[in-house]
Image (tube, rainbow, N blue to C red; front, side, top):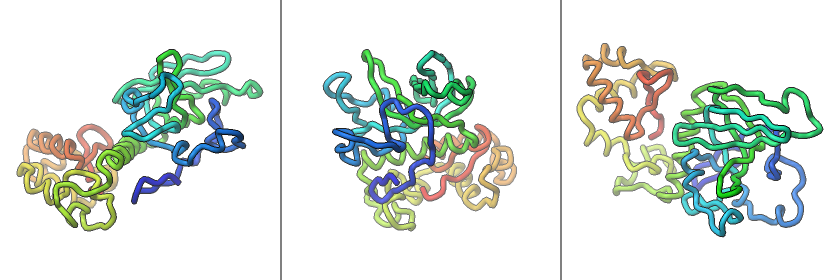
Length: 271
């Protein structure tokens, strides 16, 4: 389990794949590798942009730092843009919407079956677990494991998780703006205080249309698939254009998220 202050989550139950010298998912670790502090090997959810922007001291041999914290093991989700199979490894170019990153999956020479070869296709979403690497001033992720994304909600979930951890390290997990108990959303713990806007503070300053759409979605009994903009307009009496503008406002403040498509929305629970 990886823990960030009051926020904790279990690590993903993945197994198999190339190790790229990582050893994170099992096996013995001897010498200086085993002596590393636990935090140095914590698994960090990130975006590609965070990898690109990560600081690295001492050239290509120094540790990577994101939000002022050393990071080696990462996980991210992206779409396969290009596949380059070679004798010893497969290089994937993955796009997560914030940037493009190369991911190298090293092949086990003792396993030449189909599972060791390119198991994914272009335009497919996958999740990667691996170690940050730099070679010749070019960064990549040495993959321990790559798994297909079976549910697109995992893409949205990962981006939210990466934002959550980023805010913990940059904001300290404390409520901002003096909102006190309201900033925690009445739910206890620090989780609600990770974001600048409490619901009360946001609703005081939001447009009338945004308030109406937010309240409608908050009271909706629809499934996790959310509610389409046309249905929101029909039920609230707003025009479709007003609903679209309200949705953009709510998305910008992290109050809702898109589900099935760009016109279907659901409340981001707990924030």
